Length: 472
Image 1 (cartoon, rainbow, N blue to C red):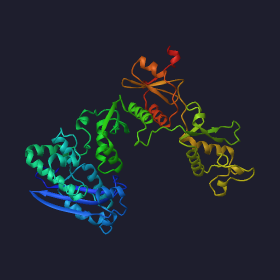
Image 2: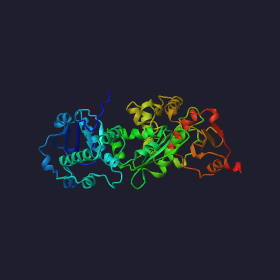
Image 3: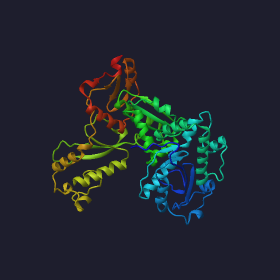
Image 4: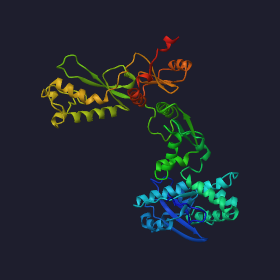
């Protein structure tokens, strides 16, 4: 049965000080818990040895120095005692996502699991005092005449939250306060700087979502078959994953673009990531330094086939039947070929990975990773067959049509030619515009996406199109 916290349930007002804002890298230096139940107050706090130096600006902000925590216990030493302080209580903190997520990470490193319902007093202040301009702790203290003796020390800040709560007990009806707390604890995954109305208006349909910073610039761009559900998953994961926590602490607004289906969302995500370069997207970023292997098939059956490294600008993507692999650097292409050579006992010399001296074996033969094609112990035909088998899964597909095609998805038509995504059209005028778009560079991510989409597509979804000059 789910535990329901009310204003009259045991509360734990929590504040921590840390060496920084990254729960994966940084550590707690102080933790305080002010427990409040049945009108009774109990205070508990500990300095914590973070096992790392405290940055100078953090020492200046908090007043906690390296010397102060030198003899303090580690977090692991106080974990059981802290768990006992928090057990069965509603976790209350200002910007609770930070404190709760940080403590969960510390508990996990110490070998403990901690989970609780959470109340954020930033959200509580926003909800109850919507006309108040700011809701950081200094603003809350000033707005309600609270007393803070030692700002940025854990016990002092936790005690300020208790004062704020007692002020609410005096100024708000019990029914209103209980209703507000219940609403906020049910939605504790949502960051305090995001308007809940935004989530209510967000469709749970296919599309792309953009997390924006305070300047309206994209921090992260993602796609989903159900936008709202995926966005909420980010916020829920932030309580346990440092990367998601960093994202949700920076986001100030969310935008979204609906698409007809999943393919449209995938294509739009890839396009927007390359155009806008959001700082927290690792995949799908622009990369023009592409490489491949080009196999030269000798018509004489008893001659070995050779491989060349070719740069993407010199590659007829989709038109050459003997292209293999799409690599993001020459070094990656070479490393991939080295691995195939060793795994398939191929000759490094015949693959162009080392210079061969006539009559002498390659290095791989000497260390038993070459079957001996370089010295006649394996026939050229057998070696060629081994090369083809090793490369088969990396073959770059040739474009199977005479020209552009449209992939239908609802009312959208995604136009593709030689693995280039030209754009999406909804009508004949839009189609003419898309077909007239400049020829884009070959994109490795879009190639993989489009190749998979074409394999899955039904015949009825694929429309063969005429080039633009034939439409005029």
